[in-house]
Length: 614
Image 1: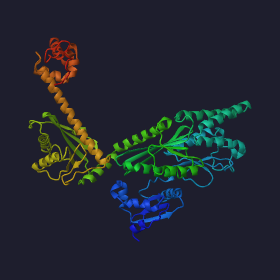
Image 2: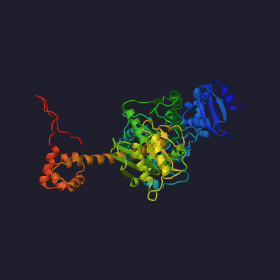
Image 3: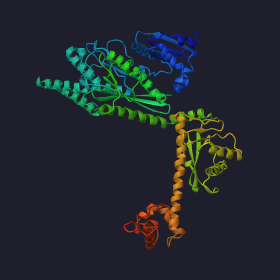
Image 4: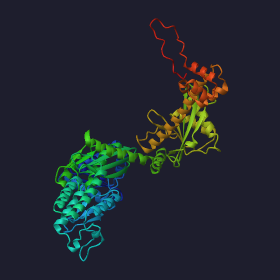
C-alpha cells in the first residue's frame, strides 16, 4: 500500500500518527481527534504550508498510526512518544540528564537532599529541573547551610563528624535526634524547595518562639539563623503575586526564522527560576504550535505543576493540554493569556527576556554567519558574501548630489571602509547617471579596493542594469550584483526574470535591509551636510567683511545656520575667531527680520522671522 492509499484509508477516530522518512526515522509525531481529517491536511494545498512544514512533507515516505479512546489519551501518548523517539520536526526538549534535580526521599526515616539526573519511580520527591545547573548547586549549598539534615549517604556505622560540630547536622547516626524532630526539619526543607518560603518563614518563627519559651536557647538560636538565611533569600527574590500564587509565564519572541521562549517560574508569588529555549526554522504562524509542543514536553516529567500557565500567544489545543495537566496535578490547571494587571506584568517580563535573548542571538557572530549562509542560498551566490558593498544616491533635484558606499564584513558594519562621493559629471536630476559615475569611480580602483563578494544597489531593475553595464564596460566578470527596492522589498537578480521576495523577517532579508538602510543613512547625512554648508555659504557671501577665509573658518567652527543664528556676537567672535565688529555685523545680518513681500494691510501682522536654511 502506497502513502496516498494509507492516508485515504485512515480511520475517522482519535489517535497518534507518525510520519517517517525514507530511512524509516520518525519525522513528526502528532495527535488528532480524527486521524483521517488531520493527516489529509498535510497533503492538500501545500502552498498554504509554512516553509518548515513544507520541508517536512517533502520528506514523508511512510506513515503509521496508533488508535486511542479519546483525544486526551492521544495527547498523552503523543507527548511520551515525542520524548522517547525525538522526531526531527517536533518540539523536543533536551534530555533530563542535562537538567539536574534535587531529590528528597521522605520515605527514609532520616531523609537527606541529593542530586539526581533522572526522575525515578521510587516514591521520592524531585525538585527541578534547575537551569543552569549552577542554580541547583547554589540551592543545595543554601539547604546544607540552613537546615541540619544529614550529609552522609548512610548513617550506619557513622559517628559524629565535622558537620555536627558546625551545627549543620543533628547526628542521627548516634541517635541524638528522634525521627519526629528530624521529620519537622525535612518538612521545612520540602517547603523551601517547593518555593513556599512565606509558609516556611511562619513555621520557623513559631518554632523559634516556642523553643525560647521552653528555655531551649541553642535550638532557638539555630532556628533564628535559619530564619535569617531564609529572609535573605526572600529579599533577593522579586515579589510578583500578592496572593502567593504558583504560576509559570511563557513569553515567545519571534524574528526571522528564529524563536526564543523564556519561562519564568513563580512559586508562592515569587520568581524562583527561569528557563530558556531556542528554536530555528520557525515562521510566525508556527508559534501557537511551538508553544503547544513546548508546554507538553516541559511538563511531561515535572511534578511541581503550577495552578496557572501564562502565555504570550494561545497555544494549539490549549483546553486539551489544560485538561491533561489538571488530571496530572489532581486540581485545576489553567492556560491563560492575561491582558492587564500583575499577570500581564509577569508575562511582559518573560517576553522582554525573550526579546533581549533573541536580539543578542541575531547580533551574535553565529547569528550573522547564519544570515550570510541564508543570503548565499537565497541568491545562489558562488561564495559566502563575507564582504558586501551597498550603494545609494542622495540629492534634491540634482542639487548637492552625493553617492555613498557602505561595507559589511562578516555581517557587521566596517565603517573604516565607508566611502562618500560628490557627483562631478552629472548635471540635473539623473539618478541613473549619478549611480553610474559612482560605480565607475569605485570599480575603476581595483588595486586600492578589491572586489566585494556582493554588490547591493538601492533601487529596482533599472538601477541594477546600470551596475551591470558599468561592470561590462570595465570588463569585470563574475561580480555578484543585486538591487533591493524599498516599496515591496523585492530583490532584482541578473539571472532571474521575476524579482525575489524573501520571507518577511528572514535573516537574509533582514541583513539586506540593514545594509541598504545603512547606505541610505550614510549618504543622506553627507547630502544634508553639504546642503547646510551651501546654504550657510550663500548667506555669508553678502555680509560685509566676510571673505573666503573667514567664511571657511566660520563653516569649520560653527557649521550650521541655526547655530550661527543662535550665537551671540561675543560667541561668534570667540568661537568663530573674527573681530568683534565683524561678529556684530554677522549677528545683525542673520537675525534681521525679512522684508515683507508686500506692505501689511491695516491690522495684518508682518509675521515672524524666517528660520529657513535656503
